Image (tube, rainbow, N blue to C red; front, side, top):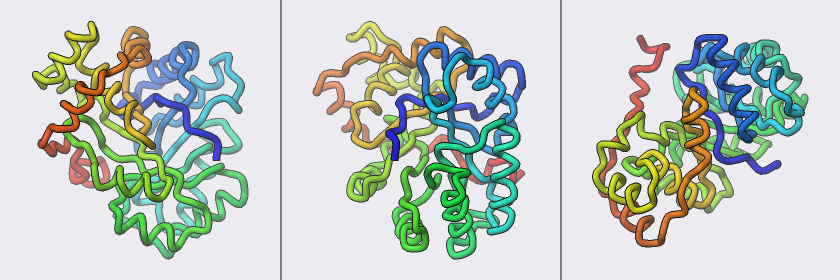
Length: 264
């Protein structure tokens, strides 16, 4: 598998067509080479337009999308993956995720479709999102292709220690969504103190902490050019900074699957 560039650009919530396309184009101009989208985000066409407008060869862009939980029955996964490629304007994606293991998801039915999409060259790699170790065990048993990544919420206040250990053991990348803690980093005194020490922002410290973890790739969600630049300019944390953040004993999940659009 080709290495997954870090950081990636998250696009969840960026569903205004022109704004999303401009964000992707700008990010690629600044040096981002990993763009993450999903059927659920309803912005695949905009993401594809941004990639097409950017002066970057397609082979240099690591593009990922995710199959909606309602579309995870075998035949639906096959059909809607092709629809995603059409919206993105590409012949393949580099990473195709099972978005959440819920609704139409059934490992024995769903995952062979992902193997077929991989065999047909419609995706270069297979991944999952929001999977526990038990679900990862099941997926790895069913799939012929390796599980390359597990995209999960991860940040200083939700550190995913068990999944990080599992990922390292099985050579799986954790792709960290909500790495900026949805703006809550400014409310964490310890992050603010470390940020002041490094003349950085608390969100930069959160990203810097993630960068120090093995097999972890953050995908911060930003739109303005200033914020896109800020996410690339993270400080180099001292070992004591990393240890201080590692010592956080909070487990504060920010993303509730019950609030996802398909459950409203």
